[in-house]
Length: 242
Image: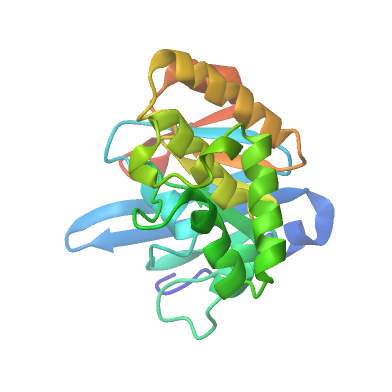
C-alpha cells in the first residue's frame, strides 16, 4: 500500500514485538524508488536477537540502502522497519523516531565516517555529551573504556588521518558502541583492511556479538562472512532473494 503498510502487516510487527518471536529487527514491504529506478522492492527480513546476519549481493543490489533506512538515514516510500520496538515509517510520517532509534542501534560506515578535525577521544565523546546529555567526565570514561577493550587506547590523541585502516575501524566501532546499543549495523567493514586484519576483525565482531548484541553486516567478503555469520541473506535487484 502506497505510503505505508496495510494494518495487518503492522499488527504482525507489533505481535512479534510482544515477545512471541524474539526479533531484534523486522522489515516489512520496504520500498524505495529514485526516479524510474526501483532501489528497494518490497524487502522483507527478520533478525533474531543475538544473531550475526550477513547481507550479501552484487554492488547496487540495495544492501547499504537497507542499512541506511534502518538507521533513519535514508527516507523510503513505503513499508515499515522495527528496531527493538522503535518503528521507522515512510517519508512524510508525522513522528520522527531518530532520538529513540539512536538508543537502539549504532552504525559503522564503510569509510568509518570519523570527524577528521578532532582526535579519537573526541570522536567518541562529542555525541555522548551534546546529543545524549552525558557529562564530559562520564563520556570520557566510557570512551576510554571502549578504546581499551578494542586495543586502541594508545591512539586517544591521534587524528583520524594518523590512524591505520584497522585502527580507524576499531575507533569507528567504539563510537558506534558508545551508547551501548543492542543492535549494531556494519557496512562493508573489511573494505579498507588487508587480509590479516580481516581475520582480526572477525574475532572482534564475534566478541561484540557475545555481549548480547545483534549484528547486521553488509559485506562482499565471503571469507569474513563465513567466519562471523550465524545466517546469510542475499539481495538482488532490490529484493532479498535467499
